[in-house]
Amino acid sequence: MPSTDQNASDDSAWMAKAIELAVEAKGTNPADTPIAALVVMDGKLVASGVNRTAECCDATAHAEIVALRAAGQAAGEMRVEGATLYSTLQPCGMCTMASIWAGVSRVVYGAGRDDVHEMYFEDRHLSTLDFIADAYKDDLTLTGGVRADECAPLYFHPWDDVPEDLQGND
Image 1: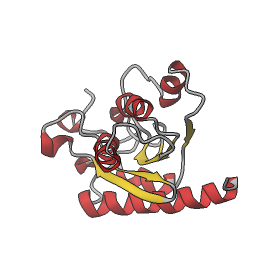
Image 2: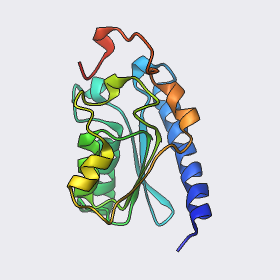
Image 3: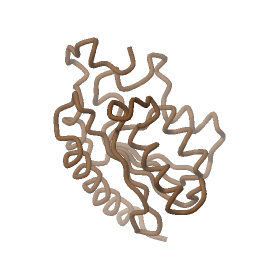
Image 4: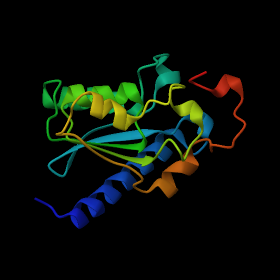
């Protein structure tokens, strides 16, 4: 089993790839929601996704969901047990629950809810940690803040006055 130092190094490298995907696919304008996710198993990229909610007119087309759907297709089943989900932004409740249903073992994210505007999360202030705890998942670990200083600038800041028409969770 890899050491904690190895996990941190791997996490940083995979998050760099997620950031690269987000910027390549969506640019750096927060209005374009440059969120990216990767599903990695046994040190290999299984699937990736970017936020496609606007393009697909689909409220569920978050980067994590897009990546988990592709991972299921690649695996030939809905569960990707033992996989790590990397996301440039802390997963919302829907994406966290999808990770649980998919059997993901680790969720690693960059920017957290305190690093970005509140519009990215539910008004009820439900936390990814709460969803994991409420699902009684002791086989799912969460690591946040990986390359947060590089991820957070992709999104609106907590203090930004974001126009109402750009807010997804109004």
